[in-house]
Image 1 (cartoon, rainbow, N blue to C red):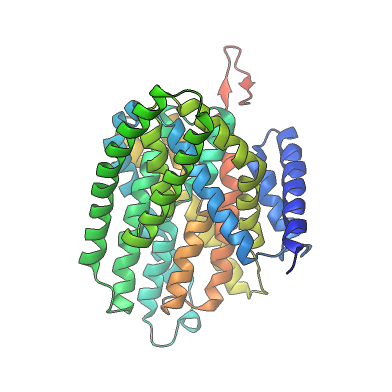
Image 2: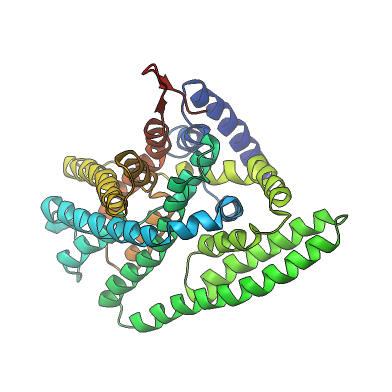
Length: 400
C-alpha cells in the first residue's frame, strides 16, 4: 500500500494556502492562489504533483460540499424574486456562447483537425456546446470571500447556473444523439423533469422531519451535521446516478432545503470548516493538476486564443444582456455576466464525453484545456474588479 497520497495532500494544503495569502496581499481572491498552486506544482510546470484517482474523488467531494454550502447560504425568498430572471439569463448565456463557439470553430478549425467519420460541422457545433458550460463553484467561493453571495446578484448567478446546467445537459444530449443513435432525447428530458419532481417531494418530507427534530432536541447538534451531510451526498448521488443531472445540482438543492431550518447557521459553520481545512484546496488545486499541455502548432495557438476570447465575451454579453432584459442595472448585468465566465471542470467533462463519442479530435483538446484553465483563473480576478465600489470622494473602495 502506498502512502504517497499523504504527501500529495500536505503539499496541496501548504501550497494553496501560501499562494492564497500571496494573491490576497495583491488584492486578489485567495482562490486564485489555490488554482495557481495546482498549475505550478502539477504536470504543467514543476510536476511534483499528479492527478490520481484519490485526488479526483476528493476534489469531486470538495465541489459537492462547496455547492451544499452555497445552498445553505441562499436566501430562498431572494432566489424566488430572481427565478424568472435566472431563466432568461441562463438561456442567453447558452445561446450566445453556442453561436460564438460555433463561429470561432467554423472560421479557424482546419479539416485535418476533424475526427475521421465525423462531420466538421458537427464538431464545430460541439465546440459551441463546450462554451455553454458554466462552473459556478469558483464564483461561489469568490463571492463568499467578498461577502456578496447572498445578494440579488449572487442569487441570480446561482439560479442561472443551475438552469445553465440543465440546458447544458439538453444541448449535450441533442448533439451526442446525432453521433450516437442509442441516446434518446425524450428519455433524457423526462429524467430531468422527474428529478425535480423527486427533489420537491423528498425535500418537503425531509424538511418537515428535520425541522421537527432539530427544534425538539438541542443537545445532539453534531448529529444534525452528520444527517445533513448524508442527505447532501444522497441527493448528489441520486441526481447523477439515476437522473443524469449534475451531482452538484443535487447537493445545492439539499443545502437549499436545509437553509430554512433553525440549525442552518450551525451546520454551515461546520461544513465551512471541513471545506476550508481539506476539501476545497484539493478541488481548486485539482483543476491545475489536470493540465497537461503538449506542444501545439501556430494554428492551434491562434485557435486557443480566439476560443478563450470568445469564451469570456460570450458569457459577459449573453448573461449580461439577459440580466438587462430583466431590469438589472448595467453594473449588476456586468457582475452577473462576469460570474458566469468560469468553465472549470464542467467544460472538461463535456469535452471528455465528446471525445469518447468521436465528436472532437485530440488536437483540439489542448486549446480547450487552455480556455478552461484561463477562464477559471481569471473569473475571481474579474469579479473582484466588477464588485469594486467607489466612495463619495470618487476613490475606489476595496472589496474585502
